[in-house]
Image 1 (cartoon, rainbow, N blue to C red):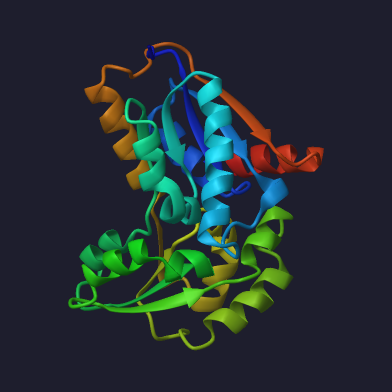
Image 2: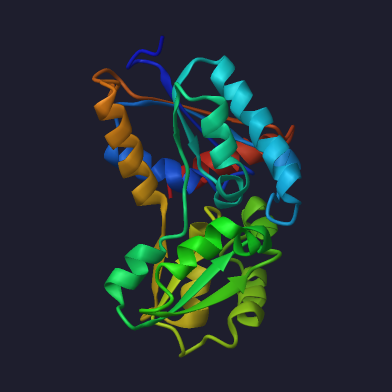
Length: 254
């Protein structure tokens, strides 16, 4: 039986889900959070769907064994690959995923030119195509795969000169041609400065973290599980490198 004092469990392929945790903390500062990054197996976005599904279940089960009241899949790729199966496997648990903020972008820029930058796996999944078809009649939407960017962010170099060089190559066809870029991977907010240097400050950068936080709060409120005590943050990672934990806390506090 879950109680309101139990942890909210979050997981991601690495440090990317920290961007979601930041939204959660702003919205629900009194909650207790247990975050698990899987940097030992990052990136997820270049793996097969079945590989990502297996990795997602492995991390989710570790969180559930710790006694969580909600599971937040703070990874776009893992959401695409595993969210439906996780909900089926744990029907009594609040399970919330994340999707690219395409609705937000379409509402803000009706008939606009939008880009969605995400991992190759997220962009080729049926879940993304279904989302895309909801808005492609009102906006022009370009898919932009970004291989290599997650790896730089996992090294703490998301806004480095090297990241900017990579982004100029990935985004060269979109400079001056899009109104907004949807960040379809939870790692990508940690490259926002470099992205803006490439595209210009006039291009809006939108991510789905706020929507995930709001949905989590809504589900917890419905279940009477919002915490009214003191908050707590615990960050763990499958990597043995202590610098990963240091990076996670640094990104959390940026």
